[in-house]
Length: 304
Length: 265
Image (cartoon, rainbow over all chains, first blue to last red; front, side):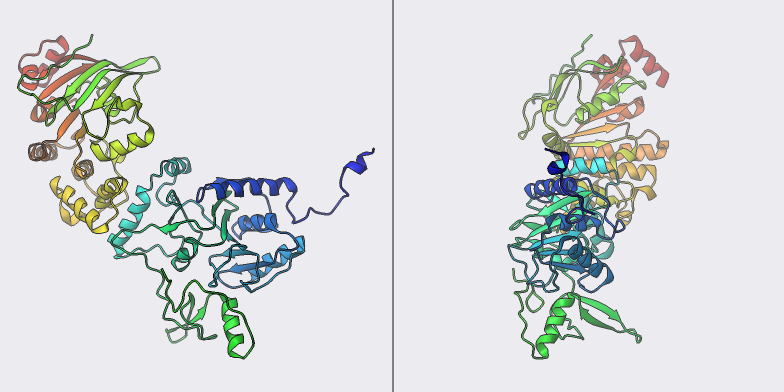
């Protein structure tokens, strides 16, 4: 028996770009994160051919979960066609041979920055969110080792204090994105910079959500059917963005999260943020047969 | 030497606070040596002594911030029993937040300087589980009002306030949940005499109105004389003399106490 029979043939790179030990590390930490919903698990974050802060955490999780039969969709601020989203999607396909899609219904794995698709995700789908700052306590406790103790003690008084002061100062909660949310009644997490509109979508969702921060080296997860409750005072109800009555001026879709497009005359028009949903709406209007999934919001309202 | 303070004969109630043989060393330094004390409901106990006499260390242990090397500490409250030094950190934190209030000499220790004053008080209530904004707001301003804080500065951060005002915010935070025990660690040191008098006035009034049990630590005999019913004199970690306030000030027995009283008068 020679050494050559025991070793694998040389390849220019391993399948899915990351080497086996890196993937094992991420798999183990994902399992831990799923086991303790909302709790941040530190992991050995590797270099990927992309700058830190551009979704390296999400990319590593996607690379670990990829196989040639997984159909992948990548979103950046709701759009499938931005440079960042297109590059990540192409990279994922190139290193794993996985097919790609833009349609939420067809995707098995969805990597996203700042948005959750408007169509409901299913049990067999996995959502990977890129997280710039995984620590919800950072604005109130700059010392990270004390912040970890506060998580261990479930000492979230200061998170509430932050909301209290926002209401005192501005008359309402000013937190727009990354709204701190209590997961499974135990850990407060930052759900990555998704708008308030998207936070209720995580509550008792059928799909698995994995949130990964590459620079901060933390993974946390929201397993299927887990409670995700935004922190709110009993007498100051949680409010999503006031987009329920807006109409997309390109597709005519109404009642979804919109991007505001400022006009020369000072007014604004709106375009639907979930670009593929807008495309499907246009196709339908042009008489093409398209399949829509069930949406989280109907007529701009989240059924409770 | 251990000196136990006997309860005044008139007090029939069971002591609220009972600490027995509490000792603490820092390396080779014996900070507190076998101190025992009982404090009765509604009573004010003053602890005097020079710097380094262990009085602040003892107070921090009463606030469960530090664990002693030996000794026991009980509070006569329905929700806790047994030696409080044996509580786990969760129970300890909850007890401190809900039943024990503390005012530090240095407001930086007790306050979030960049958050609003009312927020500082509200944090106490939030830790205790209050989740109604209107109630938080109302209780915070009530507590600040009770500690004679000007309500037009309700939302100013303590960093922008004067020293006397910062102490009032600390006091409001301490009394917001109507604690069973209020600990004061040199509450007026560092304030000028007129402000000191005002803060003492507030403390005195609070004590009369709410019958809060207090333990006050100071090196200033004037402060102790104004507030305390009973006095305990500490030196080098030990209690050298204890008794009724008037007794100690009029007729000090121990050489050190005599020195202290004469130095002041």
